[in-house]
Length: 413
Image 1 (cartoon, one colour):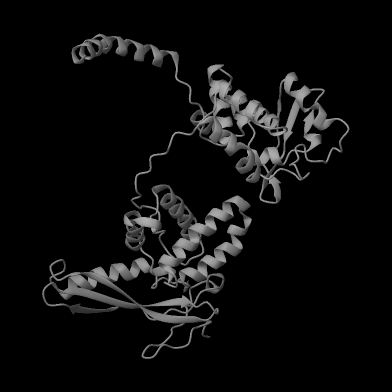
Image 2 (tube, rainbow, N blue to C red; image 1 turned 120 degrees about the vertical axis):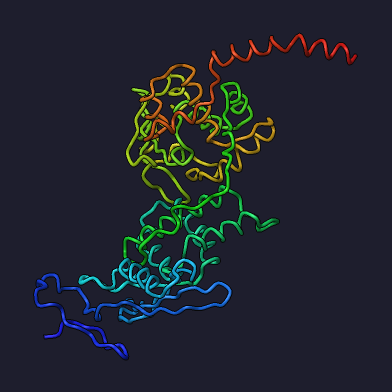
């Protein structure tokens, strides 16, 4: 009895499963053709090349199965002087494709744009909204570059050419190294799932050459900077800056604070949620963080806590709404920083606080808990302290050249 087979391809016959193949293994398998050796053609005059062809089964987007011709350049006439040698190499390529295996199954096919829509629906939809926003922008760029090209035809070489084009484009369409890095990161996620789902056998986005990206030094506010910022800010934003620096929480976490998250009696703050856009979600570390704050900060927060409903937002905008993470920075912090000649944002408070903790030799576990970092390496990168040994070295080198520089200056005078 013939197993579940595909429609016969012109010129070739389908075959039955071998009788010794277990019934369990027959399930889900397609009847394969007779053992394929492929066809071989020598093309070209100046540098002739061996071109090989064979048949593969594919699952079309509508769920039906078809057989298509697969082709590849086996090598040059110089590489394989005789057809027999070229045939041997072609046989190796066919074996690598797996079409002659008894458990061979058809490969699903889809255009890149089609697969991206499936990935967005089934995978990206489960990511955080802030992550989705950047992924959508990345995929839009790849959609313009790759469009309806079958995903199985996307090669590492093609992706590398696209990256080079982005890197060398000038003017308004110029793409920075950081943006390219982000785009490639998103593409790797898409291709990883394409490989797992059987659309491709190799992820072509893994071993790419990316442009050099010099990560800029993150601005950080000193204690004196924070004092100046607080003096120039109106209430309650001056209190917001104090809270961020002392507790090291993120701006989205500040906006998600409710009255019930502040324990004045024990001077403990609980950070459970973060705000992105109009949505309240779990914090970046996926779990609540609890830590202490000073009695001085507790007294400053008391009017915002006592006598209010526990579910009320802790901080309110002038129109009585929960703070928006983008708006309160743009409208309240940026003008103050511009007036004071400082650069940075709310992250600079966190980096400044991390630097202060480093200077005070705060244990790493405490630093991680306050900053909400899973990896201690991330916490270390937040510190911008210059150690005493480093200062001593600079002072020693300075003495070596100070006298010479002074004599040069006197001579010039």
